[in-house]
Image (cartoon, rainbow, N blue to C red):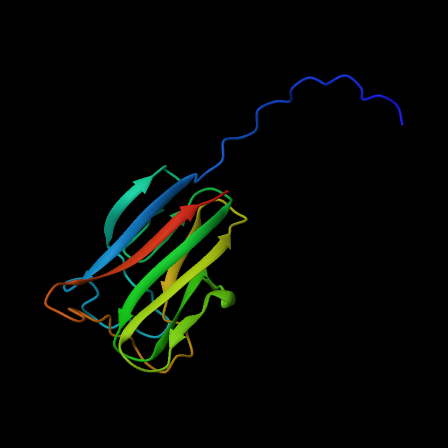
Length: 158
């Protein structure tokens, strides 16, 4: 083995790491989600929380646009009265790996998932999936006298 060679030139600087954008959408019960969320329909998150960047925005109270092709971390939490399930949908299709639910009691349904988009302007929703047996009551005033929040937090990772 011979001696080490000369050090080469420094390469180009890579892309800055970190979060590319985020958005928090929420509901307060009451008054939001006053009606039950029927089977096959989407949960509403009609209020806007903190945001950064321009690639994540709402289309309606229950539909959210992921403008850029990329990888997103999705977190939602919703307090419901009935046993049931919720699922993420992307462009109207169920993302089967994102089903979460509970069998008994009155508590939150919580989900954290990574979603990859392959087209621009993909539409994300949180849905009471088809095939469930009941509409879901988004629990108002759970545990006290103040309105309870439900959140959908979308973070663009790549």
